[in-house]
Each structure stands twice: as C-alpha cells, then as structure tokens.
Amino acid sequence: MPERIAMGGYTLIEDAPLAARNTLRVTARAALLAEVHDAAALPELFAYPAVRTGDILVLGEGSNVLFTGDYAGTVIAMATRGVEVLDDDGTRALIRVAAGERWDDFVRWSLGRGCAGLENLILIPGTVGAAPLQNIGAYGVEVGEFIDAVEAWDRESQRAVTLDRDACGFTYRDSIFKRAPDRWLITAVVFALPREHALRLDYAGVREELAAMGVTQPAPFHVAEAVLRLRTRKLPDPAVIGNAGSFFKNPVVPLAQTEALKREHPALPIWPGPQGHAKLSAAWLIEACGFKGLREGDAGISNRHALVLVNHGGARGAELWALAQRVQAGVRARFGVELEPEPRIL
Ligand SMILES: Cc1cc2nc3c(=O)[nH]c(=O)nc-3n(C[C@H](O)[C@H](O)[C@H](O)COP(=O)(O)OP(=O)(O)OC[C@H]3O[C@@H](n4cnc5c(N)ncnc54)[C@H](O)[C@@H]3O)c2cc1C
Image (cartoon, rainbow, N blue to C red):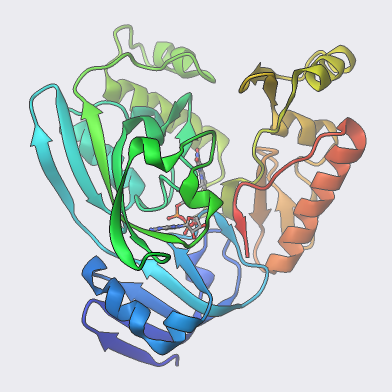
C-alpha cells in the first residue's frame, strides 16, 4: 500500500499507481504524487525537498498523456475546486474556475447559466487547468477565444502570476504553457463569456445534426446537444476503451507541398492554415495507409476513428508508442508528411 502523508492543502503519496489517472489506462507509477487541494499550498509544496530538486509533471485527468514507463519524479495532480462569478453585466460574464474542475462540468454549468461560447467544446475530457495548455478546440472553436486570463504558479520566478489572453500565445493546439511544459502550474482560468454571439455551425456536420434534431433557430444549448450527439457517435468513450482522443495533430504543411498532394490525391481534405500553409486531415492520411482498425496485441488504432490510438486492455505504454511510431513512419513513407503526436509522451 503506497504511503500517504496529508499536509495542509495537499496530500503526498509515495510510489503511486497512475493507471486510474490516465485515460489510455496505461499501468505506470510515480515515485511521488502530490494531490493539491488548495493552490495556496504550492509554495510550501515546492519547498518540500524531493519536489524542489526533482522532475515535476503536472497532471489533470490524464486524457492527453501517454506514459511509456514509470515516472521517476513528482506528479502534481491539481484537484482544486471552485467556480466564482467575478462580474456579470448582463451581456458578458467573467467567471473564475479552479484548475481541478472538470471541463465538461463547467461547459454545462455555463450553458445552464445562459452563457454562450463554449457550446462547441462540450464533452471534451479533462480539467479546466489543462484547457489553456493546448488551447483545446473542437467543431471550429478554440477555448483561447473565451479566456480572459490564466492564473498560475510560475516555477521560474517562484511566484503566483496572472497572464492575460495575449500573453498566453494561443495558436492551433498550442500556447506558451505547452511550449514550456511544467514551468507554469495553472491554478485557475478566468473566462469571459458572452450572453449572445454568432454560433459556429459550419463545421463537420453541426448544421446537418441540428436539422436532424428538427432545430431551425438554434440556441447555444441546441448546438451543444448537436456536438454531443456527433462526438458520441464518432469518438470511442475512454470509460469503455482506453484512449486519449485524437493522437495526432492535423499536419500543417507549406502550400507548395499541398498542391502536389492535392494533384496526386484529390480526395485528401485540406483546410486553410496559417500564412503560406494549409492543414491536412491526419485521419485521412492514416486511413489511406490502411491503419484504421489495426491491432498489435492490445495496442490498436480505433476502427471508428483513424486518429484515435486505443488500448484494448493490457497494452503497455511502450507498445502503444511503438504502434504510433509505426503509423508516423507509414504516413511519412507514403505522403512525405510528418505526423506530430497531440498528447504528451512521457
Ligand atoms: C475521448 C477524448 C476526446 C478528446 N477530444 C478533444 C478535443 O476535441 N479537442 C481537444 O483539444 N482535446 C481533446 N482531447 C484531449 C484532452 O481532453 C484535452 O487535451 C484536455 O484538455 C486534457 O486535460 P487533462 O486534465 O486530462 O490533462 P492531462 O492529460 O492531465 O495533461 C495534459 C497536459 O497538460 C498539462 N497540464 C495538466 N493540467 C495542468 C495545469 N493545471 N497546469 C499546467 N499544466 C497542466 C500536463 O502536464 C500535460 O502536459 C480528447 C481526449 C479524449 C480522451
């Protein structure tokens, strides 16, 4: 039985199991786990010798990480709770949410309060604290658009800081937090949510789903329901089969390369990207290589969605990573395109 030491605001657990703390359900252990219940305890936690000198990994629900082995340092699990309305003038609400709150709970809470903005981001697993990290996005919306500020503990300056949205450097599945892992422990996020805004319906079947629901004048909660139905049909549920959602990002490539690919593969979906670039469908590339539904032991590629790496039961993290690398190599050889993993590989 791992030893537990309860301190004010956090609990330390030695040799802690991580299988229930990652949605790929990979068996791994952390030399030390610190479960933080009160962000005010962070300075004291960082004064603890093993934490001060060793490696640190901040963990939320583990829905975007792949453990390829045990973690020799300290895993800091943010378990803080709290939702606080800072201001609400009837057109826009400023809401401060603790890092350990579940993202999907907050989305539903915000819609129930009549706030708009997060409807397309319903049912994304994970914590609020992890949401800014990769600027979570789905169905044409990215969370960064609705973030006013991020509160964090900065390990470099050893103090609590507040970064406004511009300072967060949000881009596609990226932010300053992702570029410097574990420098900032996000302790809370302040959202600015409008009462009314232009709904985003032109992405991956949202309009069609609304039509099938018989909705002609959608409100945010209708859009949330449509996205919920689409996601439930398309994505395997981590409660049923271990997975980390999309395992690869859609690759962003120079336009010249896109043109050549389009000539050779007219069916390849291509979307506009940053200047001089376009975004390709990673799922299409993987499926075209014949990897959808592939299984090696208990490691596999979902037969429902080519982007999703799945654990059929007892796959070790290293086996899942080996399969992911096989997919990368296949796509590289066939299309000359590099697939980048979306989860953090540890
Ligand atoms: C079925 C499924 C569907 C998904 N769909 C989507 C989707 O549509 N769009 C999308 O963008 N993502 C999606 N994801 C990925 C994942 O849900 C998000 O990335 C989510 O934000 C991860 O939250 P988490 O709490 O599980 O983070 P973790 O997996 O625990 O951590 C992810 C990263 O964030 C860091 N981190 C976590 N908490 C903090 C904190 N408080 N401070 C600093 N760093 C922190 C970790 O160190 C790690 O680098 C999906 C995952 C699954 C399993």
